[in-house]
Image (tube, rainbow, N blue to C red; front, side, top):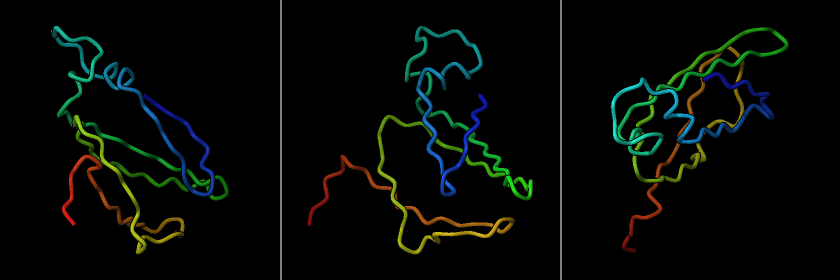
Length: 105
């Protein structure tokens, strides 16, 4: 699946439905069709290519995401840079928390 977006302030949000992800799976015999059960515990490779309009320079990145049955909250830590220079690598520092986990204080 190819998604083209125009970044605003250097960022964009991408939303993919379960049905769209399941449609990308290789066909196999299953009693489940187009359900979350077909995705659970599979690894999904996400590839991003970002082209700067002014210079035409394209930066690429990829990561593998594990599909699980739980939702997690992601938040950027204060030490994450708020700007970057084209052509240089950027590191982001993210905290993952489980909103359903009970924390004793």
